Length: 96
Image 1: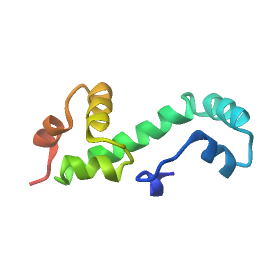
Image 2: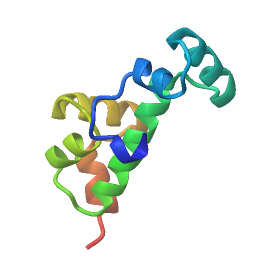
Image 3: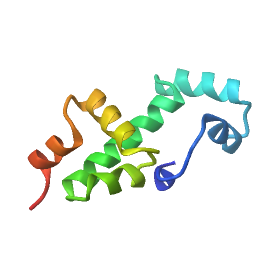
Image 4: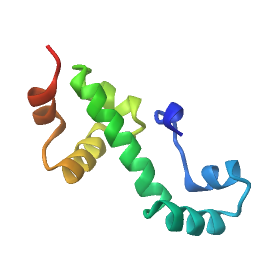
């Protein structure tokens, strides 16, 4: 999953990869990891986004690299998760 964050990844795709029905995969994944597959995927994407922002990558590029369909959707998810905008995070944490 981490190598393909830029791609559209659906729970159905993960279930197929695990050779399970989508319902069984969802249940087992949630029981094992403690969150839903889609929330887990979002966490992976946003954590990778933080790394890219720290490396001073443009926000528009970050959004694409981590698999968000729009920059606005990325900004909204990032702010919900971390309590600040991607640009504010980048100003504070970017390596110079």
